[in-house]
Length: 307
Image (tube, rainbow, N blue to C red; front, side, top):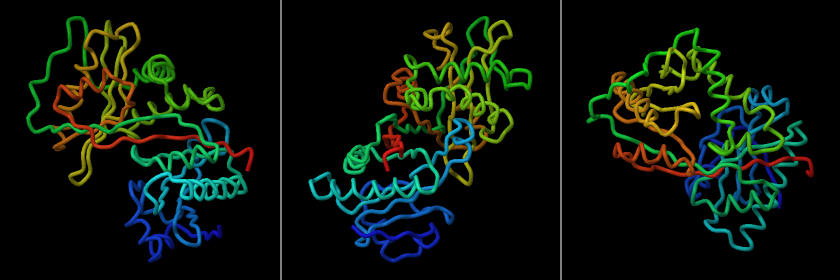
């Protein structure tokens, strides 16, 4: 195979790349941003956009990047399409390593078995399987009051240490959540720090528009972080968790009801959440609200030592 490299801006203007993007089944992440690097084979049967991840690299102390778009013309993993995909991704990995990266993350749609198997053939490992759910907010039921002994309110600055610790513990607990960063032996050391920073950024307004906290005896025992939709786009539930000793009491349902009510009050007509297939309690809670699954995806980690 012969290869060509473009900037994201060049790829978004290339007739061949645009044709592939239009024909590729289950494409995600198109168009690429202007400053991304884009690799394609000479026949434009495969194309990928990738970029470094500054935040992740800082947290984990490793130079990390992301394949933001993986497109291929063939729909299914037959012998030839899979072999070409493995060669293509091997070339991409070699170039990423040459650019100084130690690892790449990649996400493909739930029906993209060719993309998934080509990543595996190149040495990537499956680390996450998730689904996006969407709930309409036009006819929400009355928001329930928190159970006796609990208070639900907007987070205050003094809640930060407890909320950061709660986020780190909740999302890095393999048995309860199986987070991809905690699962990966090269990244597990930084999982807690990642979620501490994510919560800190949510409280500062950088990654959330509102953080609601559930307290018992004035101590935070749960939270939900929310992002307003822009220009008619859906609102999002980003992070939500309940402390281990408080689970099984329906407190997530209370947090979710108040979070969705807040999004509706900000003008959102629907709300979305991305959660793991394994998070049955979350899926049941959204299903009771009439939510519907929109799309699933698989996330892979590819380490570049051998390229």
